[in-house]
Image (cartoon, rainbow, N blue to C red):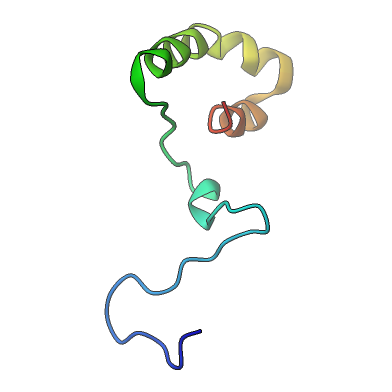
Length: 67
């Protein structure tokens, strides 16, 4: 581990048990690579309103990051 705190720079990155950093809690950008990723993002965008209706605004916001 680190013997002391960094004096400059980004500092520490916290990680949960399953590998998500705290960035997952602060509205990160979602994305998938390649042509399939583009198709998936378009498919999900078309269903955004339906997803909000079914599971609520907050859960829908979190859902988009776990496709």
